Length: 249
Image 1 (cartoon, helix red, strand yellow):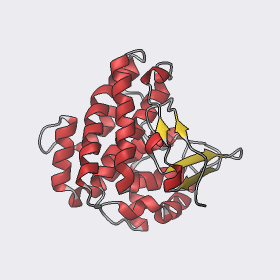
Image 2: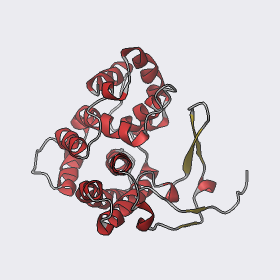
Image 3: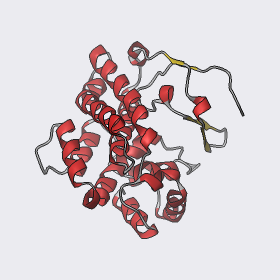
Image 4: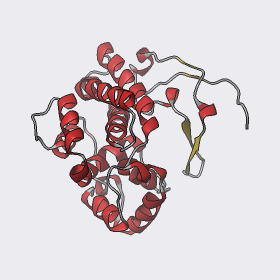
């Protein structure tokens, strides 16, 4: 395929960053989520108008917001060397972390909505570097047809366990994340994310979302094969994925 019809993207949530991404997802009638990726799919133009997100429900605001924040964090932590993308990721994280609770509390706050849309766009601009184990497991859990789980909510739930797993490989980068978030040196990033999830009303774990023990083997299998696992800063085995999934219950 040498070309596609010109795409113009008009995002109505602040999460996926599809307006600047090489990929998109189509949810099929049977619940399957199919991912397509190509440089040809990058929109020719994007209209990022935060006014279009003013009516977004509270739960969707929280879930899509954590999707954007996870993009910024995982993209920054990948071992791929791309300092400009790192800077974009940290700026997006700075904006999103401060303004997501405001947007959740008051969906009509235009400043918070503007900042969250910028966080979303910057997250997608930065994940050209790749993503990590959070997305590998979220993609796997998103395949459970009977549940049709929201991707951003899954990211939020998996993120604390992955931050703990990656800690041995990310010392200096974790300090930079703490600076962007506004935490004290040495503060627990995973605990900060869990506190954020609780503050904005997201589920406390996979069990609350309907995931069951019987789902774990399939989650491990798909996570191991997911492209995002390749750019996680610490290589994860099947046992590692199982431990992170169980920790996320």
